[in-house]
Length: 344
Image (cartoon, rainbow, N blue to C red; front, side, top):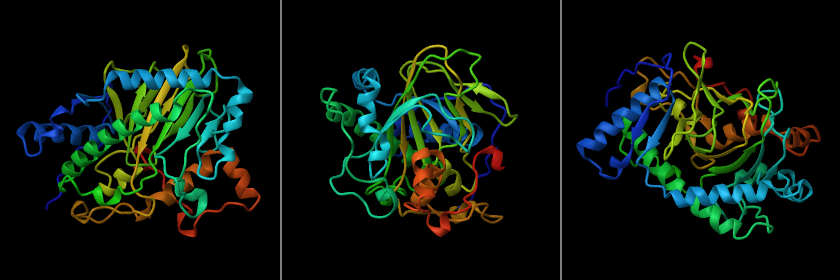
């Protein structure tokens, strides 16, 4: 295969919209056109709106209802499920617990979960695998949330297959890495904040995984373009926001952009539901050779160690465990590179 030159991140002023309904028709001309559109979006922006995804509106509405029911519980009740009590990074994240790149603490609160597994993994944070924490105060919390998780995870698989094609690979190229992936779903609540507030909803960052699939209820998300301008990405009815994560930037040798983004202080209450779609913890990620005519721009890394390294820098309770000698990074995970156009 030969490498296809991509135009690189541009000074976009809006996110592209791609209808992905044709992805179910392997080998069709319509799918080929959709893959080309996904390639352009991944290369030039790193973000896009996805329509024609097939996720039922009822599932989305149900998740919003569950999130509201949980986040309106008394603070003392929510703190029973604090993420620090979990061995595999699951549960409630109160405001101020999460800090990106050593900057200001976030104003949001969140609830983190993943695929339900009876047996945890081994190693630091159990490789983010194992059982979830399920609040008993919300009726059918687990069953209703996992219906959404499974549907959006299926969409993530289809998209990852299309991005493989966009990189001139067979569409099933990543399937071998999807046995027990620690893909995380976050239920996030942003309280209303004055516009002059200094604290961000979420500070500027890139996502550590392959893809993020996001539903949100209100504006606030902003994406940084090639000129350094922050571009608003408000919700589009019926669409998911999808963005490239660090791992696909590496695999693509920089052809795809893991773009910096943030959530500014919001003037209205906002709920957000990102699914961070990733591959198995022990997957070795390095640029595909056919995309490196002039050499690889990235060193190989282990996907789970990259996730662990970034997570340990972002959560106060994990920093505390490090200070106490209860948790440490694998030696090869130290000094991992930054991503997105800042790293270019």
